[in-house]
Picture (cartoon, rainbow, N blue to C red):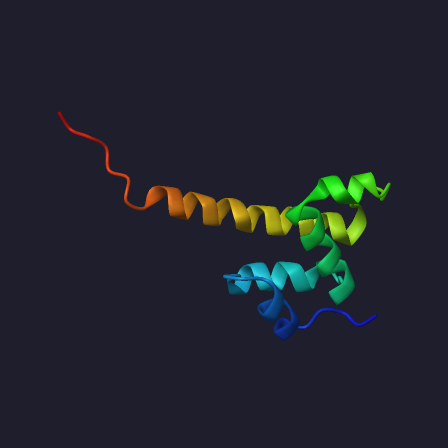
Length: 87
């Protein structure tokens, strides 16, 4: 299992900035661990139903980082086009 490279992260994680890419690489995770973290984020119920243990270690770190990135994306899209009514 090889550790993540910048190219691996850029190909896998949409809209990741340089700081986020560095944080992901800094976990020391592998490509397989990043894929597992993304699977947990996409839908944790099937993984729990397969009796897989909850994410831990580097996968948990990646889940946390990717969750923050998703929250930022959601906040960015909810802020655009919404202007308060002035009456």
